[in-house]
Length: 217
Ligand SMILES: Nc1ncnc2c1ncn2[C@@H]1O[C@H](COP(=O)(O)OP(=O)(O)OP(=O)(O)O)[C@@H](O)[C@H]1O
Ligand SMILES: [Mg+2]
Image 1 (cartoon, rainbow, N blue to C red):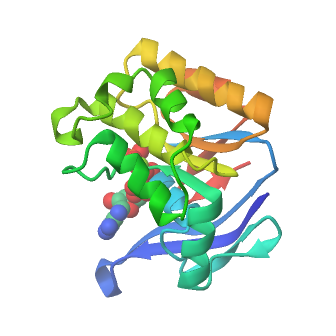
Image 2: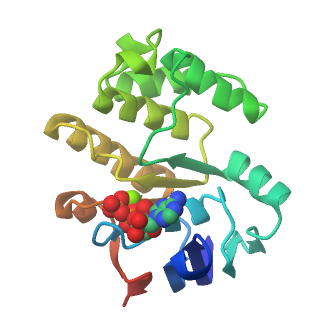
Image 3: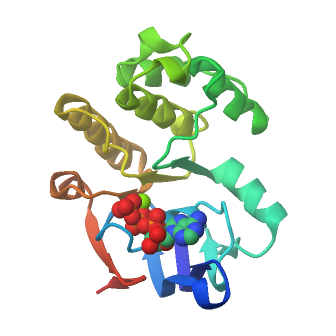
């Protein structure tokens, strides 16, 4: 489903440049649930931004469902909208819109309309009572769950999640992980999840470890 070859990414230029990814390879099969673990600052979010086609690698290639998708901005945007759902570490909800409007706008950008799935997701994640509320008036854990609804509303083929349980209590963590596991099992949803929690990683079918800008075998 997804192949990344020799990914390089740095921030800044010249003497202040920070080399974050240094030749990273990753292959994820259709229907796989992969957890990525590694120390803070090792480049996990940077990798997820690249896989989510939010930015381009300095070097290397990303292929999704057998075609190269990283090189041109227009392709990246189209593929991201159609086939990828991403839950960012900082959720990037629009603060002035209600939870439901945040989800609806994300569907509109994709040329889609709201379906019953959206209400179902709000229910399942225990945030149905927050549909009309703005993120600025929610707890961080509530915002995180709205970001999950938004990422899944268009039924993406590939779901990318950056510490999706990082701000949740144990009950909501359990609930979210069970939902991911069920989606993966019953609908063969491909999931790549960054986590610092060994318990969360245990739900995934495979865990890869990252260090110094690469994955360890
Ligand atoms: N916009 C940026 N400009 C400069 N450096 C950056 C930028 N974003 C990240 N970095 C640096 O790149 C490195 C990797 O950052 P990244 O956010 O990918 O780490 P991470 O593994 O996700 O960490 P964490 O577990 O804390 O979320 C860090 O050393 C960070 O300081
Ligand atoms: Mg991070």
